[in-house]
Length: 297
Image 1: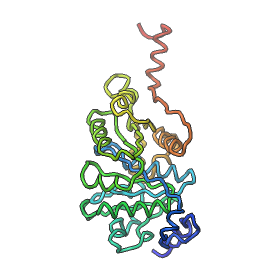
Image 2: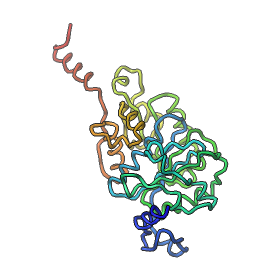
Image 3: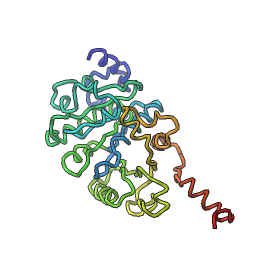
Image 4: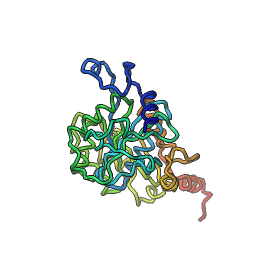
């Protein structure tokens, strides 16, 4: 992949001005400002970790930041599909760790965003094949070259979880407003190193169900987890459309889900952006009409 290697080197030259292809010595590495390494985790499968990783990565790239998203789910690999890059994957992170290829050979650049790259997982290997210390070294290498390293953590709390967490300095806990998901998220929080900065994203919120009392509210969730709330993402059919297309939901015009991910990315960059309540508009109108005596008797 000579063209890709050349493009990556041009785009991702190290802050010291040296070629990204060249290893840094100890003194140069000390002078490099490392990027933020953030693991996206939850414990429970199916809560939207991969979708969150893909959309935050693309939103941060749109904000002009250099971003690499790392698929740490060795044995499955879905991040490439969500980004529509599955046909471009030829190497993976284990190839890099085992020195079968260079970092540049394994990285896959997004089709649209030049400053967004993917480090794919190995689909035909096992999570136990990844040595934790080597994974930490890989994340460190990526931090030297990217402003954001987003690590998509596999479900569960076994070796795959430990591999994904080992190089992270921050963690985004993703949960849905379900008792089982919140319980698993609470378990994961207890397993994370104390030094890691934790933020919460509540995903797939359905305001109408919250109003009826059939779904936990965001306040209910955070009363249990007690984390800084980074964002709330509503559930809508656009997420299914985006996944099937292999495009981020933030690219679908008018999508509330996409807009929510963009707001989360802005908060990650330090902006003060209000978090909408996603109150069900029809129920709000009904309450106002009832208060004014305009509803049916």
